[in-house]
Length: 326
Image 1 (cartoon, rainbow, N blue to C red):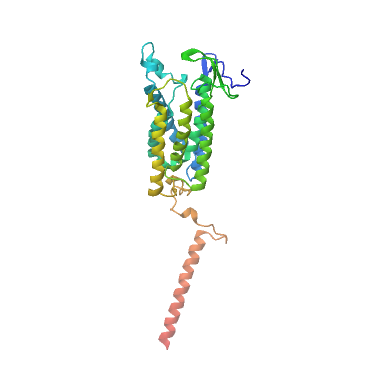
Image 2 (cartoon, rainbow, N blue to C red):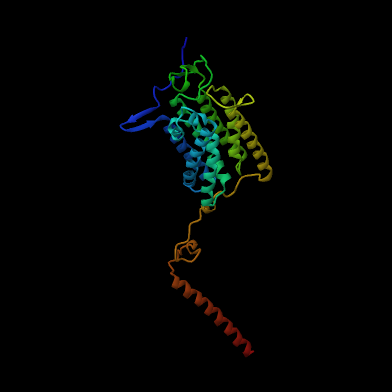
């Protein structure tokens, strides 16, 4: 007997006239805004300029969306290119299907381009954005709830997810809400990175590496619970192997980076030193001169300086004349 469960939405899209409003897309968009907002606050706290994170995100986000979709389509190619399937569906990103591994990999390429254009180090930018990315994933996972996808094994726990759709091979029933597990895990990852960054002053990409490693730990056991179709290698799902390999790479980077470049970057954005530019047409440093409080103008100061020189010269001439008399 089902005493409690998490209901699934009756539909994942609402039509506002001819315009479809999709829950999956909204979750992705909100996640991006959360990541940029938090990343900007952390970047400014590190000494960067406001708006830099958003400027680079303009490059990173499109690359990330393409990378995430490519990873999904390549690893689940039979959904789009097997008999009875329409390959055009591979472009329907609003129907779900983004691989975080591809999104991070190709998104990093876009971020690198944006950082190069701004003349700032990519690792420092990635450190600032790391917890925001985790929160973006936490929000984005609710898109799977709207689409009734990526759930786990059958269960009768009070927090079970009730699936009502029977399309694409779904069987109505109550299942482990793996989307919720991963969402909560990502919130924990974000808090861990923020705490560790404050406690240990992580720099040179180590905060981002910590995010990657800790996310992979959670993704490994959550992926193991899922029941959707996936490719298996030696008894493990493909994404389990991906999580394991990426986890090891992140840990190796953490160790080697800490030895090679300890500490944190002192300057993350050279143009954000806080110094005010000189006024056009003004001598460098002229604006730093303190205003006179004696009421003397520039001409008075010059005359006073000349009088001082003349007085000193007259005294010297008098001493010379007295010496000749003696």
